[in-house]
Length: 359
Image: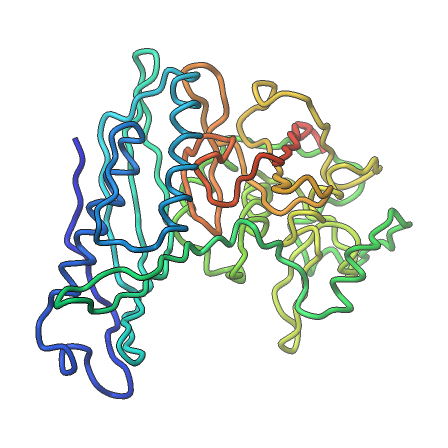
C-alpha cells in the first residue's frame, strides 16, 4: 500500500510577486501533486510503475527505466518485497522565470521492506529540480534534474588545498602537546575500544539533519561518517595539518580547521588504508558480509581509483547484507550497493573497511 501526502510550498515568490498573482489558477500545484504520486509509485513498485504524460522529459524517463531495471534484478536476487511506502514532499522553492516555474522539491520516502519473513524500514531524502510550463491550456513538466551530490567529492575550498590533498603521503606527524585544548584526543599509548553501538546510535539520530556542533557541507557524506566514528569514541589524531591525521576543530578566523580525511571521502579512504602507529586502525576486506556495525564502505562511481562517497553500516538485512546510513542524499538503512542511486554506474567499485576494535 502506498501513501503520499499533500506537498507544502515553503517559498513561492519572484521579484516580490507571488506566483499565484501571475497564474491565478493553481493547476501547476495539481501537476506537482500528480508527479509526487507518480514518484511514490515508482519508489514502491519497480515492476508495475507507469510514467504518465504529465512529464515530457525523455532523459528522465530513460533514467527511471534504467534504475528500475537494476532494482528489479536486485530485489529478485535478495528476495525482498516492498510492502508499503509513503512520500512526504516539500517545495522548498518555486520561482517564476518567464513562462517557466522552477521548483526545488524535497522528497522524503519511507519504505517497509519484507525479506525472508522479517521486515525493516528504509528511509531516504532526495531533492529534484523541476521545470513546469503551460502547454495547450495545461501544465506540463519540461525537465527534471536530480540533485546528485553523491557523485561530487568534497574537496577543499581552494585549488591549492585540492592539490595538497591529491599528493597526500605518509609523513612523520608532529605531536600535539597541549592535550587540555582537545580533551577527546588519545593521550599516551592507552588503548581505546571502538564502541560500535554508540556510532550506530549517533548515525540513526543524525541521519536526517546535521549536528549543529559541526559544519554542514553541501557534500556532507564524509563529515557525517567522521562524526559517527568519533561518536563511537574513536580518538581524533590531531596534527594541525590538513593533509595529515584525522581531526576537526571548526573554524579559525573564518578558515576551515579540519583535516581532509575528516571531510573528503577519498582522503578518509587513504587514511584508513595507511599502515600507521597511531590513529584509527582499519583493514580492508573483500566482501560486504564481512563487515560489522559501525564499519565503512567507500564508492568509486566510475572506477577512477578516487572514492567519491562513503557510508556507515547501521543494520543488516535477513541475508546478512549491510544496510547503511549516509548524508548528502540523506538515508537510513539503505541497501549498501546503491543501485537505486542516479550516481551508480556499471563501473562502480566498492571498498569495504573493518574498523579495528582497539585503537
